Image: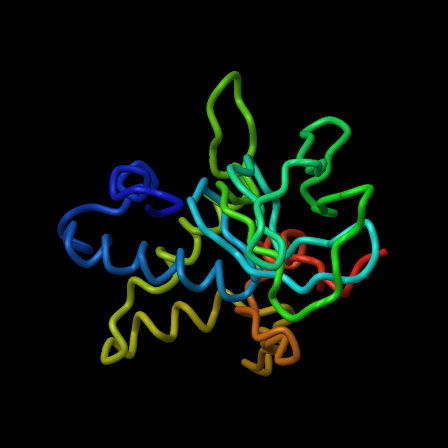
Length: 205
């Protein structure tokens, strides 16, 4: 799945003359993969089985929000006496964890959790990609429309990063790329990506 559609991009005024459906679909896939990589999580329900280290404590901090947990095994044995913190209110999405009063025996990837995962919004009974992520995906697609060989289009893309300009001297200053985070340099995109970056899950208690 992807975080926006070809129709979403068309509704932003991008015509077929400017980009074909095929090219837009490719850019949408690239934008989705980029967002996942930068934020270290994803924004749609995905059925995945993950393996985490048993901490020796009662709580394991999870790498991503668990929408629903189907099964848990510890050292190969099924367990059911656990509590998943997966509420939308109060919001557990930025601090996902799983608790077991009996504790999680210490080990390397000895806790296996099967379920459905993703940082999503809940609207009624449906799980949806957050609106800010969808908007960021559309912006990423549109900024990548110029072909690498299109010098005029690449210059327009560079101008979008101007933060100061001297008209008489014909000089300008580009916003610096946030190299340490590998973000885009576009503040409208980068603020969203920074907001949704997953916390680093370290151990448990």
